[in-house]
Image 1 (cartoon, rainbow over the protein chains, first blue to last red):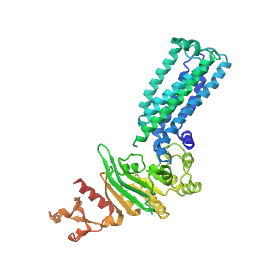
Image 2 (tube, chains in turn brown, cyan):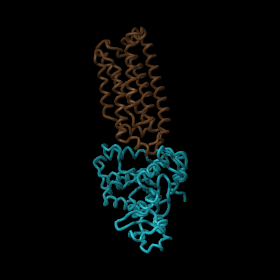
Image 3 (cartoon, chains in turn red, green):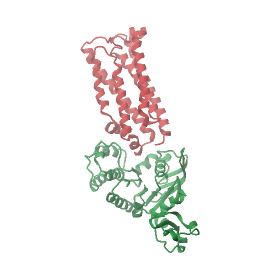
Image 4 (cartoon, rainbow over the protein chains, first blue to last red):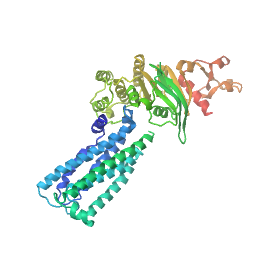
Length: 215
Length: 281
């Protein structure tokens, strides 16, 4: 797996993946829908898969002495690592934002611990929607992404709207840290758990589809 | 000794095409030419062998083992060259090499450097900057640097100029002498005249012959007939009768040749052309 991850890093990675890490700085914008930063992360992953198709990544990978399912596993693990790296980048910028005392986000969810939990759910949801469809037919990566992107946007709309609609979100989660930290930590834990579960299930199902695929 | 590759009863059904009971073996150190016209099933067979395509039935053994038993060990001992390197064409060769080498426990850096020099490949170039022949050579470098015992080559000489093709065939001969087995799919039969020990001939998804190349070719004779020489009585013996520059051409079985004074020794291409013509009829 280590060698496959190195292959992802040296051959498969698309420059936008690294570029979009820099978009964590958008957390310094006083009021902004911060989930969008994470959407760029998954857009970068989509580019990895598109260029992978153009570069015949799967054909190359399958000639290596690996099991077919390892090709799927390494790609999804790589995606998860990129997503978690983005979380770390965003966390660093949140520290900076707090140090600069920029204040609450009027456009949606505050840059706080709960944001990470809700963003991890979004990333897990994307992984589940995208990779299962992608590995049914890697040539139709655009179709898989279009559906996943739309559903991810629906999630973002729902998550942001929740801070205006549901009192729990409005009064507890959408507040500056360290207010209501237990609720926010639970949200983070649930987010992380769902991220892992959804990604694991995506991996399991994608492996099955990919195993059955003829090239 | 176990065959390096044994394919038995391989079947794969598609909507408009089927591989039917494909069977052949490749012995150690042998160059096996896998011939057939475009669409005959060569690539599908190779892909089935490599498990890229899932056969409906059949058994494929590499070095006596199936993919299910030892996929990784088998892949470590084979090299697949599907034409030239056509993946990651904008990455430098040294980057592709550095990634690829990690997967092979038997990777030989010295051999890799030597082959790169022998083939005059610059590791700072990208595949996009290489000629078609150099792309094939780079793929061979990757296969040879992990000491592949079996090379599966899917039309490696297609699109190459005659000199590059000849160069590659020389390389195949050298490898074969050193003990590497080669399964070489092509529709350029003259390449096989130069280097193959045996041929497997596939037509419409079925194996027509799998035997020593000289034996296969010498089983036929070429016949050229002027229009007035052709009689109805001859026709049952003429295989793949077709118009030629000065009348007709065909092949006949060697046993029938005495009845045709103009019968001459033939070559693989002529045999294949007339057998295909016969199948069409």
